[in-house]
Length: 63
Image (tube, rainbow, N blue to C red; front, top):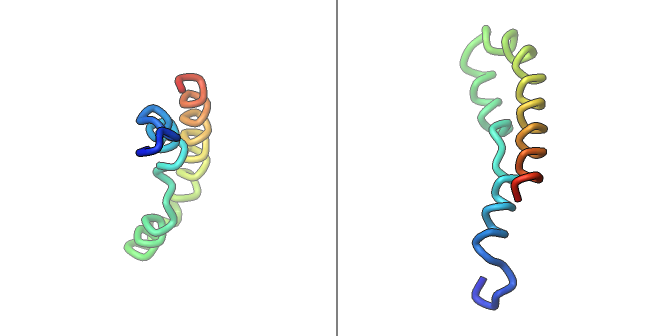
């Protein structure tokens, strides 16, 4: 950023692609907490993947 290769706009656009809610450490913690979570997790995965895809498309259109 000091040399002018990246701007704040580029960093914000990259952060939108890199920051996701489907993080593996968080999933591991929740899977270890309760026996009910794994049963619910199989229904949540398609929604999570769809949300990430829609966010990616919206982010590509905005930035």
